[in-house]
Length: 147
Image (cartoon, rainbow, N blue to C red):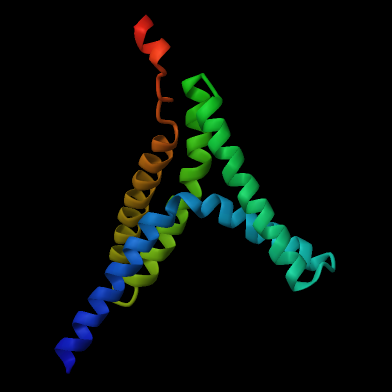
């Protein structure tokens, strides 16, 4: 029974890590959505209004990010937009890793070391996914004839 619990724990940790890496790009829209929803709730919009406002703010943030990363031409501007998406993902990766690691090792120094490694890994993954958003547009037949 103990072996089954250990295997289930490892599977749960693996699933949470997969979910973290998959959803890392959405950290900025999630932060914006939660902040806008909390603001809307604080101004008296109620829970349904806060959810609606937060969802709209998160969707708008993601759409604007996609448009900027796709349409902006200078590479330094694309890098700024990518950094805006990667920084919250790295922070979320740090805290998620720290939440897992603090249950596994007593040393604070090793907890921080592994949390930083987790933040770097999530940040790199988010950067690769954001860079994938900026893939070159498909060429038409006429563009291929010119090339």
